[in-house]
Structures are given as structure tokens and as C-alpha cells.
Image (cartoon, rainbow over all chains, first blue to last red; front, side, top):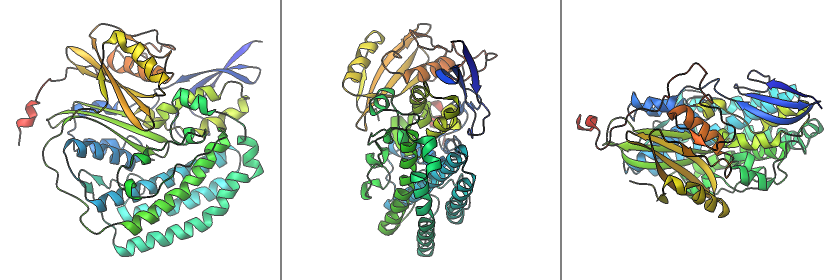
Length: 358
Length: 127
């Protein structure tokens, strides 16, 4: 049968950021996929030459808007390790609160995009409406909606007083009561299921073989979550990875649906257990040595490698983002699918090209 | 401070060492390359049950590295990125973008390939 190459992207309604997949089709069945990158490559790792280690924090927060505070957190933890800085306990709890808020708004955004991709426009609008509550919390507590820039070397820039903590808990209660019916729709509604159930299957064996991370891995039954490495205050919080076993697009959606509720509970627990005290400690000296740090982004494992030689500037900064790891699994999901199923499956890995290309 | 779980090997031993880690259930997390003037330092990061292990080897300038794409599929992306950034060629790279993975055809330089000072940085003396 003759083969046709159809370029999917770089601009496509389901892609918030540009990537191109050259789909090799026989009739309308995908036989092979060739990814094309480089549409938003910025070379941010190179900036260590011209920005000192304190300025690089602001660069790292801008690797990606959706998970900016988690990039900042990972960078700070690495440098605090090199500088032997002990971060105040209260700051660690505050870091958890803001990073879980980021996870929530990222997952809400993804749910909205997923609803749009399957043609459920009203659900898209409801998901974006609920996301606004999370954005409002971030704006009220940090002064900004997306790049909140709360992490600093040695702690956090802002504190939450008792009134703010009570207000956040009230907002979460209201949000949860509105979200639970929506979560049922995403997990059970026929329109969603017929576009996602049994489609884009990644088996547990494939996920292990190809190195999937985050909700893609957990949707295939792998119980890995970097929060279990107990960074920040996660060593004092109860966390179990959200795992689904079917490995299809619906399973990946269910993981994210449940992780929003998990994040709400983690924020409640962090606010209730938060000790009194300082939120920032003074940092002196210059980093020397090498370190690897990992945290859990909304899309999975984020790795920072830093090499420093005692100067103002770092010698090497390497950032490995989760979408980077989830590209080979995506390429394994697509062959055999109908062309019309491709957009939803691509979206199911929650691709973030700003992170991937840096 | 140095990396825990780091093992230094020769480039010739890389494929075998990676294959052994694969059999033991390690997944490839990433590859970090650093330009250290006289040679490139390549660090391979692996994970099993959320514990990291690292392999490190040196590569002389102008020499090709061994690709591990036949062992770990993820290496295709990281090795192509390294080709873009450092101009290092990989022998046996499955799906070789020939230095145009992130960069355009018009790009003529390798952005991260630049001399790095060994030892203390002179700027460390500044107040």
C-alpha cells in the first residue's frame, strides 16, 4: 500500500506548544512517526556563562511557565546542597504548598485542553473556570499568577499568616466541592471514554523499557513519584503515588484527575503541620562541587545537574525535563492508530516543549 | 561535593556497563556532557527504584562516542542533543539528526562547546 507523510504540527489545535510529528500513513493508519524539534529552542543552559548562580534562579524559573516554581525549587535545593545550607522547616512546608498549587493549575489546564481535544467544549470552560481559583490563590499569596518566584536560596520569599492559611483552606474546600462532579465526568462520561479508552496503550513493560516518567508511567502501573524521595517537607507528609494500570489515554487522564485531589490534601496537611519560625536563612559563599537534584513536576521527573568550581558562575547546568523522557513512549504509542486518534494520544502525555527544548 | 553512586569507566566499557545496568533494571535518566578543555566528560545518569547511579567516561576531542541507543531508546534524544550542543558524533546512533535536532540547518556553531577553566575560578577571589 502506498505511504503518505502527514505533518502533524508544529501548529495544531491540541498543541499548546510547537512540535512536529511526521506521520507515515498507510490509508489512515499510522505506521511510523518521525519527531521534529527545535521550534522553541532557547539554549538556556548556555546562560551560566553570563549569569551568576543567583541570577540563574530567575532563568530556571522561566524554563517553563506552567511548572516555574518547581524548576526554581529544584535549582535552589541543588545549590543549597552545594553550599551546605539548612533551609528552615517552615520554608520547606511553604515550598510544598506552592509547588502543589502549581501541580493543580497545570493539571487543570491539561484537563481543559483534553476536554477541548475530545470536543467537549463546555467541560473545557468549566476546567478553566476552576483553574482560576488556583490562580487566584497564587496571586493573593505571591503577587503573581504563573511565575510566582517564591523560592530563593535558603528558603522562600514570602510567608503565609494564619488569615491567609484559613482563606486558602476555604478556597480549597469550595474548589473540591465543585471539582468532584467534574472528576466523575472525566473518569466516566461516554464522550471522554470513547475517545480515550483503550487508545494509545503503553504497557507496563513498554513504559519501563522506554523510560516513561510521571503520569505516563503511573498510568501504566509504575508506582514512581519523585516526591517519595522526600525532598522539601514531603518527608513529613503522607503521600502515595496515584497509579492506574490500563496504560491507555484514559488511565493517564485518571491519574491527573486523582492527583488534583491528592495535591489539595497535601496542601491541607502541609498547612496544618507547618511549624512556626523563619522562612529564610542567610546564604553565604560560593558553590563548589557537583550535585544532581530531582523533583516531581506535574509531568514527571525533573533532573538538574550542577557543576560549580567556586566562582560566581556555574561551570555546567544540565536540565532534564519530563517530556524529554516521555517522547520515546509517545513514539511507541502511535503506530497502529487511526489518524483521527493521534491528537488525543499526543495530548495524553501532556507535552511541554518549552521544558524539553529549554 | 561529588556524586554518590558514581563509577568512572573507559569509553570502550560503556556499552557493556550500560547493558549490565539495563539487565539489573535501571532506566536511563539522562546524559550530561561537560566540555573540560582537554576532553569531554560524559556522565550517564540511571535510576532504579528512585535511587540514582552514574557512569562517567572521558572522550578526547575529535573522537566519536559510542551510542547506547540500541540499549536505551531514550538515548536517541539525548545523544542527538549532545551532537547539537557539543559537536560530538555518536557511532551507531539510531535516527541520527546529524547536528540538526534542536538547531537549524543554518547553524554553524556548537553552542556549549567552549573552554571551561579547570581549578578555582578567578572570579572566586572577588568580594
